[in-house]
Length: 333
Image (cartoon, rainbow, N blue to C red; front, side):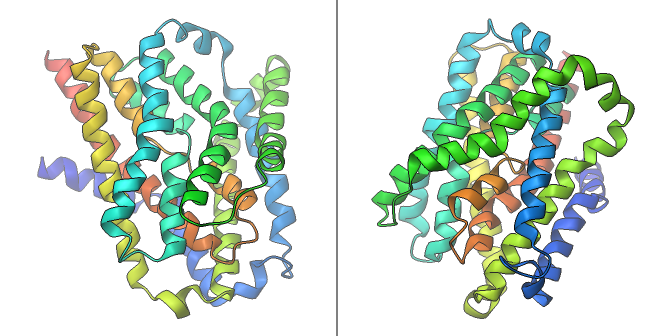
């Protein structure tokens, strides 16, 4: 067990994306005027183009055949989507009741946002495959969650933020903006998949890194705005510890509940794996661009996206350990 944990830690330490996020935060802390809105790098324009390219490439990768193969496992889909858009958002209320006194309001808004995000496609499918779970069902659920999230995430943010006394969102305009930014290039990518998929596969070593590079640009731009507005001056480094602890608590609760629920409902091991990994994941790839649309005028945007940044790394680390454990159990079974 100790050797396995050490191996996962070493692999995480070699993750260039994690190093890139740390570097983006450091650069934003020292040079906030470069990437802030209206800054000399004009990051808001660069990011918009980058996000469109990333979701166009996502459209190229989604196989309709795999999506269709997972369609029939509808009980799995119901449980996963309820975990994502019902249980996880409701989990925010006891979390807020317990920790509202120690978590700043802008960061608490970030935890609310984390709770209402859709699942992530890439890591949900990858972890399900690693654990020898129901991969077609994982592809279906992760894709469906991303599409539903275009409507559900701004809708839930609007409803839940208003109950916290925050201002409401222009819901229709927000959903339209998110659909234009994420869904339209995804749809175009699907239409052009028969023509361009071979090209994409040939250069996958390069195209596969584009989404992460765009996320790093988004993180840099968000933190430039927040640092310029006084992020570190007003909160200090202890905000990192608070965010990490909060993300770990939410992840632990959802992993335990999704596992117990799948077993209680009598799902087989392959479907349980899909439910656990798809129902507990939250997307960074869609989450940061949507945050820019939902909270773009908020000077604390960097603080709002901090929970999903930490949650993303934690879910990769913890779920890779769980996936290896599932795979060993099935191999010896």
